[in-house]
Length: 118
Image (cartoon, rainbow, N blue to C red; front, side):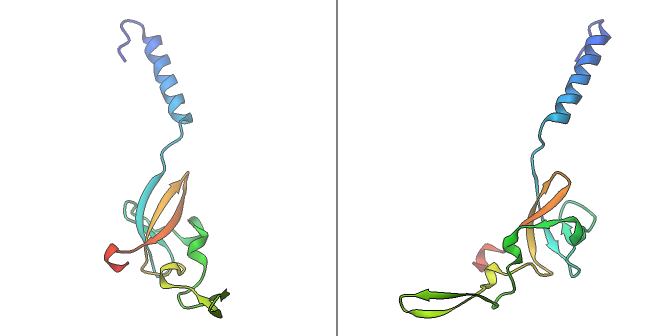
C-alpha cells in the first residue's frame, strides 16, 4: 500500500493485515506419505520422518490384521464369523497413505491403493 506521504496509515494497514492473518483459519494441508519399517510417517513434501508418537491415525486403521477374526454374524442362511478383509486392515510398513495436517499434527486418514487393484 502506498503511504502517499502518511507513513502512519501504511504502518496501521500492515499491522491490521498481520493480525487478520493470525486469526484467519488456515486451510488443511493434505499430503501423501509412506509408513516406514519403524512405523514412522515419511511425507512426500516434508524431508523429515515423523515418529509414531508425533502423528495420529484414524481409528479405522487400527482394527487389526487382514484375516483376523472380527465378529460373529447371523444371517438367514446361518451363523458364522466375519474376518477383516485386506482392504480394512490396520497400517503396516510400506503402506502408502493420505494424511492432513491439523494445526501441527499430521493425521493419517487412510491407506491408498492403485485404482487397478480394486
